[in-house]
Length: 173
Image (cartoon, rainbow, N blue to C red):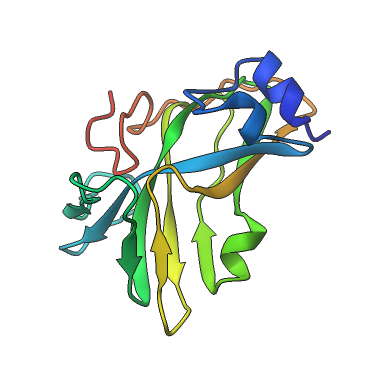
């Protein structure tokens, strides 16, 4: 069963919303842009995480002198962090999808499953496919999280990203 936006908020699954009434949707919650980063090194991924090494990233800053000015992103792939955080119950899982205004503009958002029991920051990969780029403003609504209730309660996520404060996850417990 998919939870409504109202149910997600009532159950306190997503927090740190900028404006609850503006972000609540019939089938989920809109997620807003906190920061954009670019990758600066390769990552290492293996089977048992003994050789795992996160990519180094650098933040692409918003213009602090002009809060109305957005960032123009050229075609390419970026790491984005959302303002919102999640506390997923052990009987639910989440999916992050792009808002339709993004894909209609030639921009995609891709993220992994938000596992049952995960608590912490949320982020995603953003691909700018529009050959003319895109301009994004701080706090833009760029994605929507849909939460599904599972058939049973599970033990829940207990990995390196648990409790992280950024999507890179290096600061996780």
